[in-house]
Length: 126
Image (cartoon, rainbow, N blue to C red; front, side, top):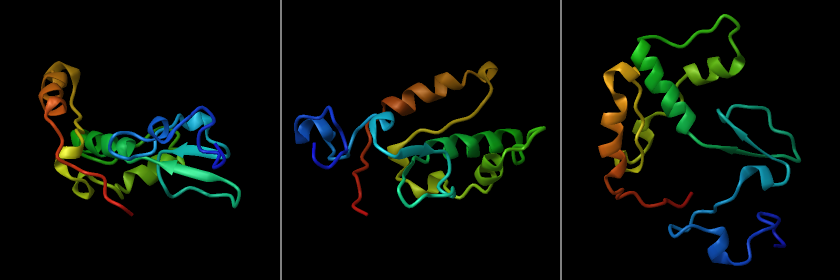
């Protein structure tokens, strides 16, 4: 395709989901990196994709342990994620499921019914 978004896409339907959202394997996108937090350095000739799912999972883990997450060698990314800049309050509650618990508490039993519930969320134009 001339836009360089997907070399394998043959049509609009191949490039976009039923909801009209672009779909692609990030490893095929030229000069593009997937990041865990949007507050990263950005080069003039580079694209950055950020998805809040890791942040949502991180936030749930913080809630589970009752404090910010800390490591022996604290990476900068941990400090960024500990800011909890993006939360489930930023989303339509029907659009995602984010849980954290210990396996011994059978968190998977809580996840399955929520995941199967149909979403009423619709993409919002930016």
